[in-house]
Length: 446
Image (tube, rainbow, N blue to C red; front, side):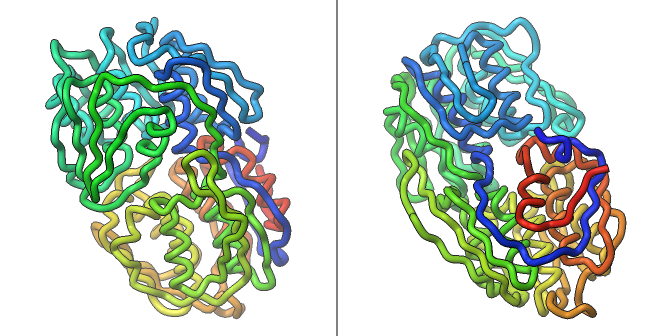
């Protein structure tokens, strides 16, 4: 991570137009899955453009603790010696996932199928996040699972006398829950069928197929049979669209901007942010579209545009759930009101992202009305001084996406914006400050 990313406080001032070309780090969600499936495969897998962030390194450390040989150059190239589905070893201590909800929920699915017991722990933020949505179906599959009060971490998981496939309808769209159960299904007798209430990211299904494991998708139902083998393969991790989204919004809002983001993943279950911003009036074009393994990738060009408030379509909510903090910044600068509903999931991320963003936007002079499952944001004209955001001091609540969203807000503010508690930016976007500075955003660390 860079020194700027590790800083406790960042200060941002309004600056010039953004210009240039950048490549954002590898996709965090795909990086987690690459480690897990390569570790469970037979043979050696090479991973390129792996995200060297704190969350994904925690997943690497967990599998090393279970006997998997993982070698890396520190710059995104990894070689993973797969142990096969039954080849993991009992760890000597607890597996610490740090701040990573993805790491913990997906690893729980793997741990539930092992012949040894595992304890999964995390930091204070992760220890407050709910795990009932994986605990209950894993128990239904035959795993023995213990959790702290309120079904929160730490988790202790042991394989039961018999792991069996289940037919399970997920109550709330969640790729983490779906992936957890599919990974547990690798170890279960019979068929595991997971039905989604709405489309959510499908990286696990795509990657399982890349490793030669049969997965059937029939509309909202995803099915696999347990007990088959994964075969090693190369994995190219695309750039993370969740990281790219910060610069997409910044270039859209700062007058005169024109940037290109290279090799960004544009999986149709993850590109909701692009559809939402285009509906608001953003000028976003894709070129050089291709496949990186099983994942669609493209270069994204973004030019400055005036935005208008919209009612965010319900069918796009799950596909943009991680990008809403910076979408809220776009809404604050758009003309008219932007309304979001059906996003209760934002309440149980690294912070309560609805409440955290509303509080920060209020500091910058933006009127927002909070609802249990969403928010209304009254925007302003981003090109007029009278409509620009105010300066102020923002509490990021230790949430990396809140911190980065307000860095983008600072680029539109009349006075400097100071964002506190920014250390966790490195969990998902190492090098964020340097990339932002390279494009022209005037951000510095303290």
